[in-house]
Amino acid sequence: MIKAKKSLGQNFLIDRNILEKITSITNIKNKTILEIGPGTGNLTSYILKKKPKKMIIIEKDNVLATNLENKFNNQLTIINDDVLNVDETILFEEKVIVFGNLPYNISTEILSKWIINLKEHFWFECLILMFQKEVADRIIAESNTSNYGRLSIICNWKLNIKKICDIKPSAFFPKPKIDSSLLIFYPKKSYVKIKDPNNLEKITRIFFNQRRKMLKKPFNQLFNGNQKVLDKLKIDLTMRPQNINLDTYYKLACEYENLRS
Ligand code: SAM
Image 1 (tube, rainbow, N blue to C red):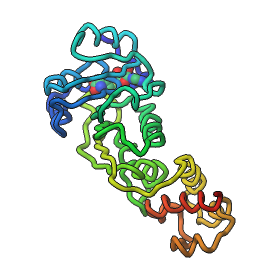
Image 2: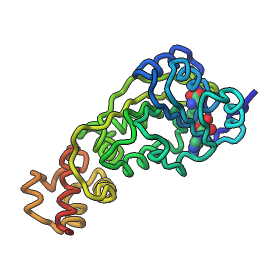
Image 3: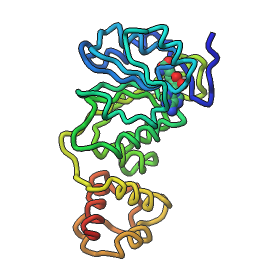
Image 4: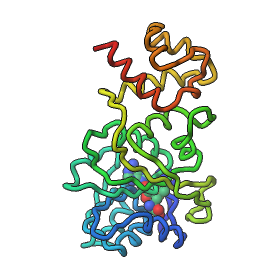
């Protein structure tokens, strides 16, 4: 019997209907699959049943990685490492489908790493990821709502995101205290070209530092009160950071870069 480690966010998915649902979202047959944090291999088994061409799994826990090796020996490749240390972009020759019931404590860190490092040529076909519901709500939040913020802006820059469903704690063992949500991310065909994604991070960090305050202070800090930028992007300095829509944030990042080039 495996003892789940809280420090590694181990809540294993045991609900067969949910496992079937996750693996029916997209066609897996003959596709290349990457699974992050396979744990005891429940989702892995469901994926393998659908006959992918190739599958790689990344699991940090040494004991679980050894068990997975024994369970699936010739059917997949196991990387026993921290996903944050792995460069997924060089693992495959073709685009992959990524599955992950992510460890909640590092889920946003993993996502930011993938999105910030995304090059022109996307390395994945789609990402099918589970988050704690509260984080998923922030990822898909629209402007003018209380959940809207840095995570929504950064995640939606190059990706279209859709919620598949919410999942109750009873679907896991051990039961987490919170609800989860399953999201799917697809690469956008076109998006605003920002030269250095760190500029988008910087702008959203400074703007949302005081999310209830008016924009005047953060705008002046970054743009030195530049009226042309305000007029061009139709920004009113009495607005709050959550009133600026996604597209305007991406354009602000470009204006910031233009002023520095
Ligand atoms: N996918 C499994 C399931 O649905 O039953 C387990 C999901 S559990 C929420 C998260 C898994 O990610 C655990 O197996 C844990 O050991 C693994 N994990 C935690 N931190 C990790 C990291 N930094 N890199 C890779 N795997 C990690």
